[in-house]
Image (cartoon, rainbow, N blue to C red; front, side, top):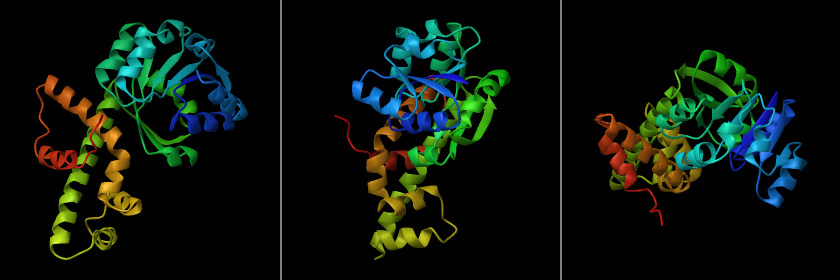
Length: 266
């Protein structure tokens, strides 16, 4: 496939490498000269404008960090107007489902494809993708996504991918909040956190939150690393549910416990 790529950072860079290795031609928008040199070394074609990244593309993959950056690139910037007829815009960024619908309202053929996993999952081709959009659009972009993701789950109409990811991250935050309370309880009972986490990993309370915390050296260490992403996604989930008149219900106290651990943002 002829692909454009915007956002070759912590997650995007290994995606680009996997796409190139899978035989796709990838034009990557990069403003920094050093980044362009590195991307060219990986076999991609670095370009200096969004228009150039979109030129002739079967699909353009967007992997910026925030919803605001999606709007900056696609709505305020030149990307959407530059998309060729028949091209698909695939938005990896976790954000508000209303944003991707706004892009579609501007005439773009959009799929929202937020991910679950990290750079190591990209490197091994085991990233999970929650895809929202028309079946034909998801099908057209699937060969690119499959270069680094397995499974690619089509979860519904445009915006459904974002909604599933926000529920996923809210539940993960709640699990971490509960785990932090469990560690506090264990400490009161005289059990070291590292011992407790190792034991929980072998019991009926085992789960991704406890396993990831054990691997990172404790709940606080995991939250410190994932904090900026969790804070961002919880803010989107809170705003969206409030706008729709929804409630987190019993998840709220657990999420509140997690928020107490989140590092402050300057």
